[in-house]
Structure formats: structure tokens, C-alpha cells
Amino acid sequence: MNKKDLLIRFLLGGTAVTLSYLITVVSPWKILAGIFAAFPAVMLTAVIMVGIGAGTMKATNVVKGSVYGMMGGLVCVTAVLFILETTNNWPLSISAGLISWLGSSIAISILKEKTLKKAIQHP
Image (cartoon, rainbow, N blue to C red; front, side, top):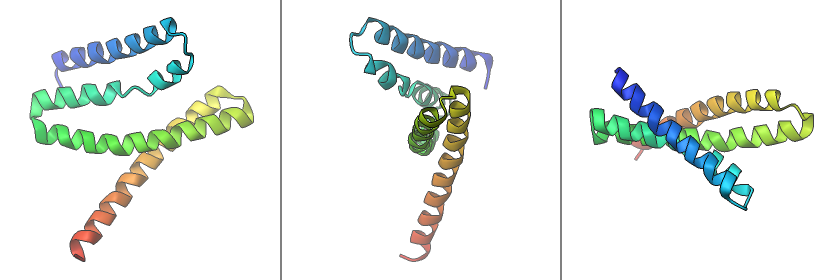
């Protein structure tokens, strides 16, 4: 990754986060803050940058990996909500959420690969 790529990622990601925040500030519906908190700005920026730099096939791989990360996101949100409601400790809930996101995302990708290998071996 070169400095130009890093700058573009920063600008795109920062712009998306800023716009999401501004929408939540001006909107009368407070639930939008949570909805826009899940905006996939990082994934979209990664797909754009990889697509520009390496082509569609590599961008497709980023999108496939994003599926696992977003499924892990559901596990993360569930963990954060549960721990926050039971302990009232937001730093603990965020830490546990991030750990559960990474662990579940990796576990889901491993399960998918094993399932795919079995399907190929035993048609």
C-alpha cells in the first residue's frame, strides 16, 4: 500500500463516518444513530481501492471476506448488548464485542472453507 492509497482510504472512510454522524444529528429519529453506526464504509472503501489497484477478482475476494466479518458483526453487537445490559460496563462490553467479532468471523470462514472442501470432495 502506498501513501496515495492510504490517503484515499482515510478520506473515503472519514467522509462516510462524518456523513453518518451528521445524518444522526439532523434526523428526528434517534434510531438512525445505531443504523448508521453499522454503515459498511470500511468494506466499501476496501472494495473500491482493491478494485482500482488489483482488479475485479481481488475485489471479489474482499467482498467474500466481508461477508464473514459482517456475520461476525452480528455476534459482536449481540455480545456488546448483552454485556452492557448485564454489567453496565461499556469498556468491557466493547472489548468483549471486538474479541467475539474477530473470533466468530474467523470461525465462520473456517467452517465455510471446510464445508466447501467437503462438497468438492464428495459431489
